[in-house]
Image 1 (tube, rainbow, N blue to C red):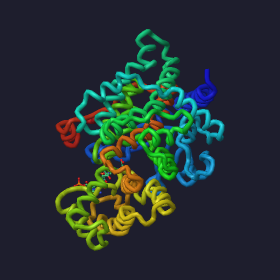
Image 2: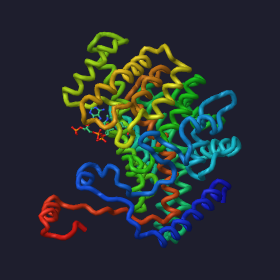
Image 3: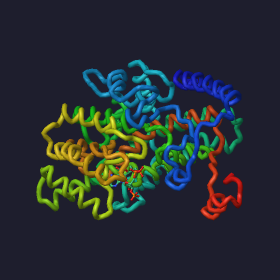
Image 4: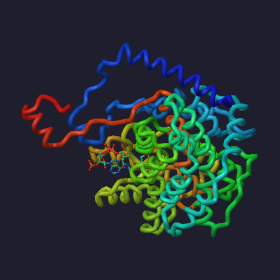
Amino acid sequence: MGQLKDHFYNNAIKSAEDIKALIKEHGETVIDNVTLSQVYQGMRGIVGLVTETSLLDSNEGIRFRGFSIPELVEKLPHVEGGSQPLPEGLFHLMLIGEIPTEEDVDHLSAVFARRSHVPNYVFDAIEALPLHTHPMTQFSIAIMALQTESLFAKAYGEGINKKEYWNYIYEDTMNLIARLPRIAAYIFRRKYRNGDHIQPNGMLDWAANFAHMLGYEDEGFRELMRLYLTIHADHEGGNVSAHTTHLVGSALSDPYLSFAAGMNGLAGPLHGLANQEVIRWIEEMNKELNTDAPSKEQIADYIQKTLTQGKVVPGYGHAVLRKTDPRFIAQMEFAKKYCPDDALVQTVWNIYEVAPPILQSTGKIKNPWPNVDAHSGALLKHYGLIEEDFYTVMFGVSRALGVLASLCWDRVYGFPIERPKSVTTAQVKQWLNKEISSLE
Ligand code: CMX
């Protein structure tokens, strides 16, 4: 067994033993009350699942295994001369629960490079789609085409002991993460660069190799990719992409099936597609006003107009967060260093000044502050990656790190198939009228 795999299993199985004891002693302890409005309104705030890789605090933002984003930027290994964290380091942290050494990260980069071969029939599946197919649809279809490679599905079909599930899930996880940048880059080059594909460079780290295959050799863009692929990786377990991957995985669907399902959720405009929507919204505003640098007054008017039209202001609001997303701040810090004078970046910062009080004044938007998607597109545009409908694919490449690390933990823990209870409104009314004594 490889060192990383060994290390992961030893840590996870120890935790699984702890959980057994915890459930034995406290399994009947009531942890939460559920209100009727929570049942009708997206189950907001109901504690209903365990995800070890990260935890979201509504005021402080995300912590990965206890570390905030500024702490990660400082503590995770960087490339020599660089300042941004390597996403391999975050994956190691989420999978093992410990900050990796530079050696650990070099090892992981090499493992991903070694496992990155994508069979030709996956590219053929992409080629069979019309060019105008949304990149997220292409991405999901490509992951599904790659499912033939699932070692878990094969082993399950041959009949394995359930104690061995994690072993194959781990192998699928490593193979899938290794292959995603190649698939994403293929979709990009096919759709936007006349199919002029670029072969991977196995000497580069995971993010730099992705940048290279997209066609960007600039060190600033590589650093952006390292940051981007780190901060989008995980946001605890209840968000649509993480929860979907976990849910589908609970049916023992293999990591390819589970992750593709998660990506279909990420493709929604209220979730990951918001990064595309932010740029479209700004560009529509600029077009309407015939400027590249709208004033704060013009931005305020455009936000009001968006709200009056019954649309959302993309990049603002969150189901859990109640403050500015630290992932937004991390990107703002990056922009201050690399591109403070960029007109689009300036507009993003002006929106940040103008939008919160307007959104707050509606009295109904619970979080008037920007989320991760409010900033990311402006940075990509700065480096010439102007095709905004590709942005969610990049988010998806990163999200694999968190949700697949979690899937490995799910299988060591032996979590059962997920199956919450639903009710009908007729039943709710009967219960409220005391015609039935419970909703269970
Ligand atoms: N613009 C306009 N209206 C907004 C809004 C925004 N940015 N954010 C919330 N609202 C509205 C909601 O649509 C809801 O309206 P109704 O009562 O008419 O249905 C009301 O305010 C209350 O919503 P909420 O409780 O504050 O927010 P939710 O938890 O329901 O939704 C989210 C959270 C992110 C879907 C929402 O804020 C939104 O639509 N934001 C814009 C899209 C976006 O940026 N999504 C990316 C989120 C991060 C990610 O997953 O990547």
